[in-house]
Image (tube, rainbow, N blue to C red; front, side):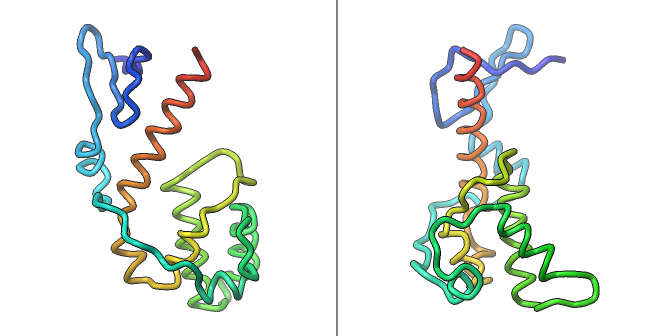
Length: 147
């Protein structure tokens, strides 16, 4: 079976695929069922955080590779700064898995850096909505580059 993105669809909220003679739609609801990630409106997030100030001096232009370097440098199997390592690991998962992108030098959204300072807020955050929007954006950008 071959799954082909429907290149004629310009709908930026859904993904449409052609399978043989049938057109199917992959909706936010389908994505939530498959991933199990929360899918609701995005809450207000803090404008700043102690974690952001401590590790990044409050800079707005933190790159993913900086997070990766800090994570590898500060967190090792022989012990590291426990809470800092947990927060770096969460950021690494968000950008290395949920919002994966090939470009390691891309700038990280400081909203997510602030979120890790409040683990309960981070845990209840709507990662499904963010991940789905990212998937649709990347899929359409790839399709558009082929046109």
